[in-house]
Length: 127
View 1: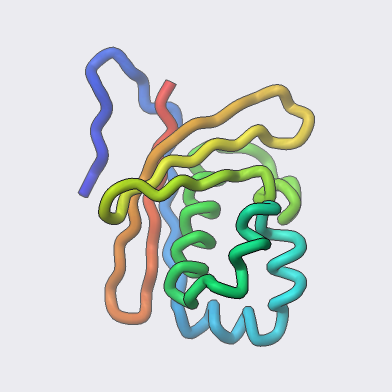
View 2 (view 1 turned 180 degrees about the vertical axis):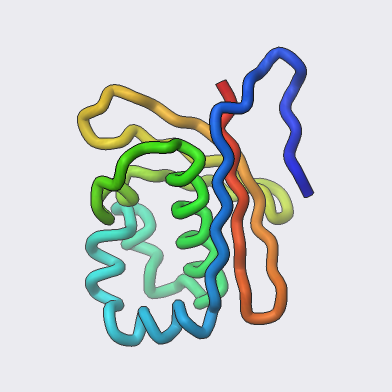
């Protein structure tokens, strides 16, 4: 499902990401503390123990898709700590990000999709 904004807005960026739950599980088994400490923001770290594999895969895919939609240069995983996701009804979400010391602010929306072992997210930035 493609999200569509009202007429007087401009699409600034689109990002899509797709991850395998199996590969996410393998990655977490080797790098759990690294992921928690470097990839997640403070609120996400507090709830990390309670996140299911599915929920973590969705969060990861959403952050990757949002990053791609923003078109920023890579700032390391620390840049992902500043991203905040808010789940909406169904498979929809909103995200906010103020990358590093750039002074820029991004707000976007997106949705999750699934197929077998795969979890994906599409994110869009409107301006």
